Length: 348
Ligand SMILES: Nc1nc2c(ncn2[C@@H]2O[C@H](COP(=O)(O)OP(=O)(O)O)[C@@H](O)[C@H]2O)c(=O)[nH]1
Ligand SMILES: [Mg+2]
Image (cartoon, rainbow, N blue to C red; front, top):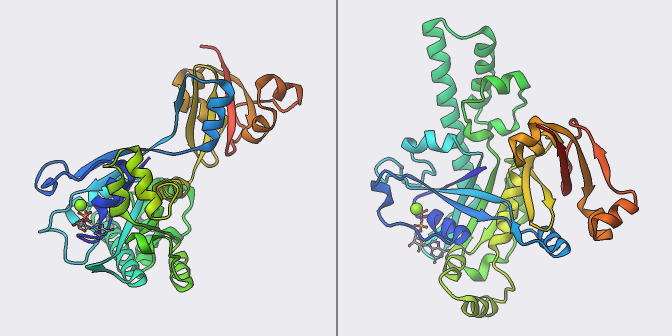
């Protein structure tokens, strides 16, 4: 699952990336070949900590997300624009977007105005892409009638300046567009990059409403402060957090929000060797879950033993869970729920 960071030049995208991953920006990256720099972030999860302790697991493996910091070319990215057109193919490949809006000394952007501008950019990029495809189909007399009708539907929607996020598309239409990577349909989260003193302030009700109307959510982060934390040892970090009146860095909350926005749920496999958190898209089945763990488990799937995290947390051991009748046997079509713990029975 890849989340790409977009926003105006100097909005603090690389600083947000640094804050989330601990990876400091590479100077001059815009001129090089590496125009999309990935970083891994572990999703903090108290439930996984509990499982590790309950099983006495030797290893703990949290879910990881990939965050991408792009290196826009200053010659390509227009002043104030959130996208560098030459990066579009890379951005279309993302599962979600993190939009950075700067509100720190020296770089202050109005949240609603900036967001409206960015949405317009996303919508325009999608319109341009759909329109080009439509033109080509007409010229070559290729493609199916279905594809042409579907393209006409989305171009009309986009021509009204509306994001595809709110456009109802049938599974067949989605199939036609699966390789398009429409930007205005991607789940997106807005990060207001501000100074520490304002990080805990809430966004105004008007701002929140406007953002919700776009189908988005907003989060404040003091990116420079959080990035600096990574450069200190444990004691130094504690002191810096203390001085700021914080107990823990705010990045974990942002990471949790990104995770939620991706539409992912977490399931677990736990035992003495390892306590392992895995992710799945909402609506996927236990057979999909087995495939995430190992292809053999899906191929030879027989049944799965399933217990909800809540039931395990109440009873605290496999034996007690069973005694209480909370262990379920589920077949391949069982739709996984948030926090399910599974043990797959399989034969290959
Ligand atoms: N004071 C302050 N400066 C910041 C903050 N975030 C970024 N900056 C500065 O803004 C400049 C641009 O940041 P950068 O992350 O490179 O922006 P990008 O072009 O969006 O990747 C750098 O000089 C940063 O140090 C912040 O939260 N507070
Ligand atoms: Mg940058």
